[in-house]
Length: 171
Ligand code: S3P
Image 1: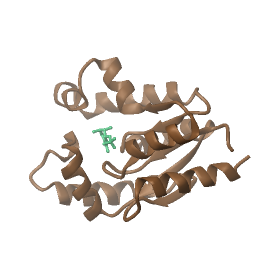
Image 2 (image 1 turned 180 degrees about the vertical axis):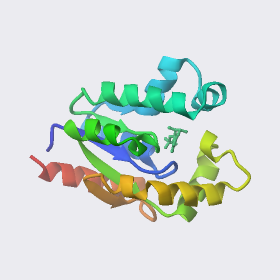
Image 3 (image 1 turned 90 degrees about the vertical axis):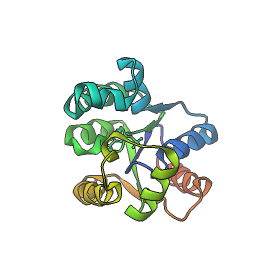
Image 4 (image 1 turned 45 degrees about the vertical axis):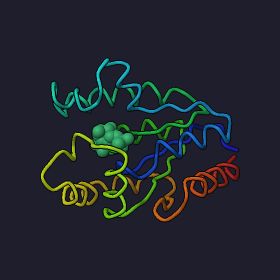
């Protein structure tokens, strides 16, 4: 089993948070959510940060948090969906972690996001079109992860099993 961090990346609604929690329980590892750390530091919810200070400010906070959490080892790191748009974040995370991209289609993500609640970037007239646009823009970054795991059409238990089994084989 790898002693590195297990890092989950993927679009909003791809199941990162739930799968991180399951993996944390299953492997007895600490779970760190970059969004949660940002919220703690800022003292306000993510959509409030976007509203008051804008996306660029949020991305800077996110970068600082990624640098900080990349110093950990043996953790599960649940990354906000946009972490990978900054190449230096990918580099930092890869130094101490194995990256898993949770892959899903825009249709699936749209349905999941409707259930799990609004995100500031999708607070637009046509959220489905926005998901398609962002997913297209980000795909090449997500694919820089070490492994791609299909999240769509699989239970979160199955996805976490798949990730754990890959990690077991890694020295
Ligand atoms: C974002 C995803 C969100 C959160 C913020 C921006 C993005 O996290 O970090 O709203 O740019 O994709 P989740 O992927 O956990 O929803």
